[in-house]
Image (tube, rainbow, N blue to C red; front, side, top):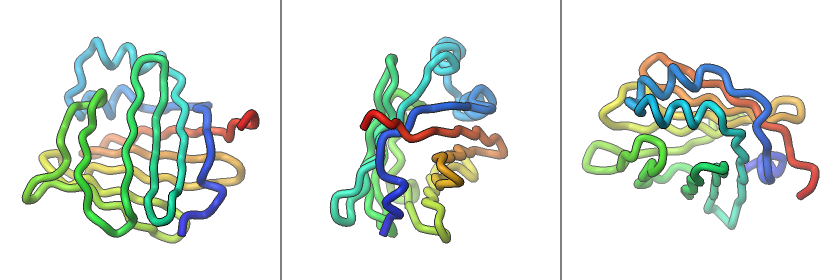
Length: 143
């Protein structure tokens, strides 16, 4: 079960190495420039054993849902527009201690993300082929 502290609305306070991560994903220079200026908001919800993570910005929103321990198809629309599922391409989220970890298996090596709470902040590391983007969010008190 997800720690209840992970659920909620979170506002971005820092975003380190998004550029390097996006270059590795093959995202165009134009989209990278837009993405660098955005202040994202994360909304994390749990409905039974279904988890829903929404990334909201003034430019584009991205929503996906999954069940821990169950492979799922992911379409990274608005990011690098990949379908992450086929015979050997999938996403799988598991708990590693208090960290929610996703492995995105496909054409890019060592790709995925990790969410966890440290003190009162939500941390997100996005990684792909040696590039790591570190994002930190604080809970929105106006929920």
